[in-house]
Image 1: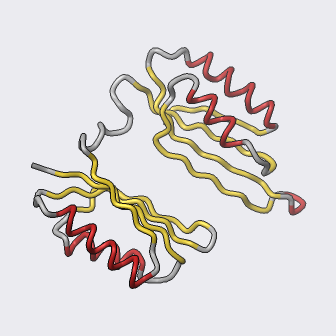
Image 2: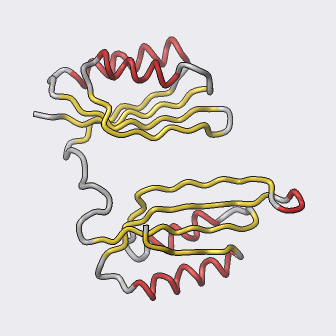
Length: 178
């Protein structure tokens, strides 16, 4: 029977982290199914979706993860997915859309827009954000969210609610099919 795992790791950014984690997965006879990796601040963050058929794969991953934590200063979380992986994006009964926001960087943009989505049972499949120097040197914030909108939700009502929140936050917003 196939087992599923999420392995996440955070550590000071340096060459070789991905190679070490990929080698751990390979050495444990585990298949790397999906991944997200990025530099955040001075650290490198990794999330891996893995599968295995060997009954001891989780134990082997856990032992290897502890070794990487000790030897390379990583913080690793290993989680067994009891129910297996979820359906592919978009989930059945949903439409896939991209929500984008941009404006002056300030606290509350992600919280406000994500709360608006959550209140309407819109699932976030992927989110990325960046703060960069904008015109005149002031910080400019860009947010991109891939969302699964229930087919039963009135898209005009969702757009109206998101527009109202964008006005409150003073950001430009777009909602488009993905």
